[in-house]
Length: 414
Image 1 (cartoon, helix red, strand yellow):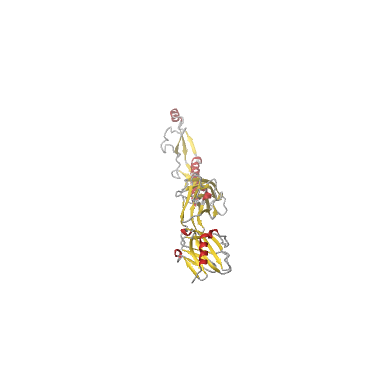
Image 2: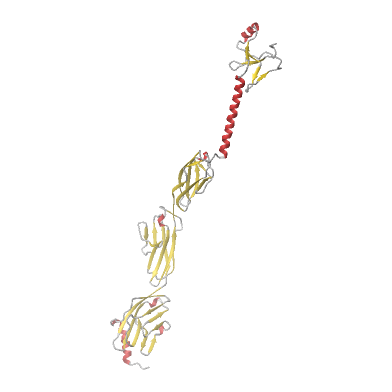
C-alpha cells in the first residue's frame, strides 16, 4: 500500500499541533472508568462522509492511526484497544490509574478540511471494605456519648450518612468530622437508636456499611392495669408495664411486704378479705440501674351474688361461732345451778351454842339443802328418797371461809 508523503505530513502536523485546532467533534462529557474495567470514547457527531485519515491520541502519544485502507495500533496499546472506523469509537480496556487524562480525536474527511475533539478520562479504584466502627459500651440516655467512624478502600469522592434510610443531618448534638467520615452524638437520646448507614461513592462504584445503635433508658411511666374493687371469691389479675430499654424486670409488694412474684402480672386465683390493700409494682432496668414504682389499691368486698367465702374464712368463722356457743352454754349452766336452788335454809345454831359461836364467828351461816333443781326443771333429791336429811353448804362472806360446816347428819330432820 502506498501512502503519499503529503498525507503523512498532514498526520504529523495533526499530532504536533492538534491541540491548537478548533474542536468540531463533540463528546457527551468526561468518561469514567474503574481500574481493570473498560471505557469507550465516541464522538456525538461523527462526519457523515468518508474519511481519508483518523487518529486517536493520549497526550502526545499516538494510540491508533486509521487510513482508508489500513489501521495501525501503537505497540503500547496492542491487546488493549479496538477501533470502529464507522463510528470512530475507541474502546480501551484493562484500565489503570495511569490511563487517566485527555484523549484527542483528529479526522481528515475525504471532502477536505479537518475535524478535532477531545474528552477526559478519569480512572478510579473500586470502593471496597467499607465498615463502621461504633462504641462498644452500653449507651445510656442523657449520660453517654457515641462516636461512629467509617473506613474503606478505593477512590472515595463522596461520603453520605443516613439513619433508618433517611439523610442524617447535623444538629446541636450531632457533629460531623471535616472529612465527613465520622459522626459524634453527645449526649445520646432514645431517638438516636436505629440503623446508621454510611456510603462511600465514586463515579464508578459505591459501597455501604451499616451499624445499629441502641440507647438504653428508663424505666419510666410505670402503670398498673386492673380492677380497684372486687367481690369475694373471684379471680383478679393486675398487669404492670413500664417504658424501658431494655425491657424492665418486675417485683411486687403487698402492703409493703415482698412477694415472690417477679413477672409483670400479679394473679389472685380466689379473693378473700386478706387480699385488700396496696399493691406496689417496681420496674428495674439492669443496664441503666434505675427503678420506678407504681401503687394500686385493691378492695375486696362481700355480697357477691352466687359467691361465698373462701374455705379458710369459713373455717375461721365456724370455729369462732363454736367457741362463743360453748362459752354461752357454760355460763347458762353455771347460772342455773347457782341461782335456781329450790330450797335453801339459812339457819344459825341453838341459842347457847349459837351465842357462843356467834361470839367467835358471828358471820358464819350455813345453807340447808334438801334438793336441787336441774336446768330443765326436774327435781334432784339428796340421799334416800324415803329419808329426809339435811346437807349444809358453807356460805362465804367476802370470799373467805370462816369455819367448816357441821358434820354430815348432825342435824337430821325426823
